[in-house]
Image (cartoon, rainbow, N blue to C red):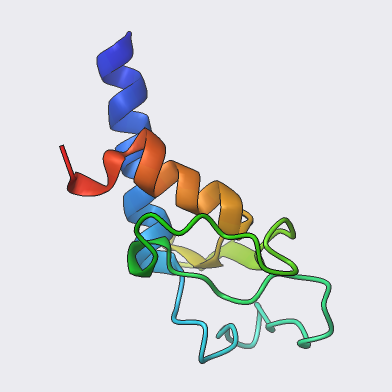
Length: 102
């Protein structure tokens, strides 16, 4: 049971790390997944890997990230972003997944 929880946390960390871009850029998308405006509704893109030991407490760290997904006609699922808050991303990577610092 514990092994499955660790594997799930690791998978979340990998998805989070691969889906979240650096904070210098806003979200990207396409014609079917148009990114939101930077109006404070969503947290800015956040990369937990860049912040070891630095739990996010900045304004908006408790807001969800933007995400959008759809299935193309050929069956491929397209995913942009994720809906985790920066705080959830940090915990998933550095606490649950241990950030590779075992």
